[in-house]
Length: 291
Image (cartoon, one colour):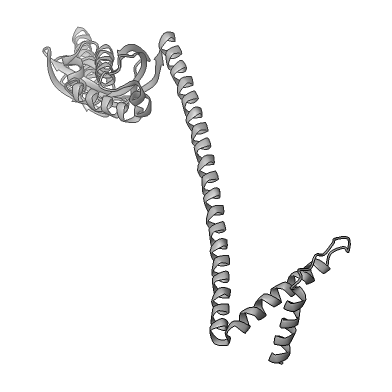
């Protein structure tokens, strides 16, 4: 009886030992984690997602590290731009662990280390730019910060996925000074536009006067050309027909003048020179002779 009891106890002990070995030797790692295994205090292996096997009583899981993307708390730090403007910058960083063995053995507080690194890089990059450039080139500034942070945290086994500059705030005095400068610039632009308008008005007026003068000169030139042409015709007629042609033209002018006076309202007094009748007679003779 004692032998049976003793055999059962040994069997139970062996069964319990096997169960414990199986429990200690088989590890199931979730998809979102990686487990760092140590043997006698030294790094042995990093277990990935799924079923993994360990040597019982020799290997132990020292660290369980999440590989999910993490977000650091929003941080705010002061920075001075290249034109000596004090700004308060709010940043946010996202990262994830890629090599847990580096994260657990090379850095104690990875969150604090990344936050400090980002703050230093942001101050350095903003110090290279003026305030207007910080506001207008924020995308390029964020990209430079992310690249530098990624390079500096590579030894810690983490990957910076995003580094955002959420806001760039100014103190009240600087904001008031910038607002005053903006109002002054708007006033200056308004004055410039008004001056440009007046200048354009004067230019258009001068162009109009010049155009009117040119047209008047053209009209005088046409009239002069016509008179010159008429004079030339008379000169040719005198040359061809002699003095009679000239007297005929004078007589016609006198007749036309009297005809214009006769077309009045009838209240005017007409004075006819003494030799007018002779001129009419000569004109009639010439017309008769031409007929």
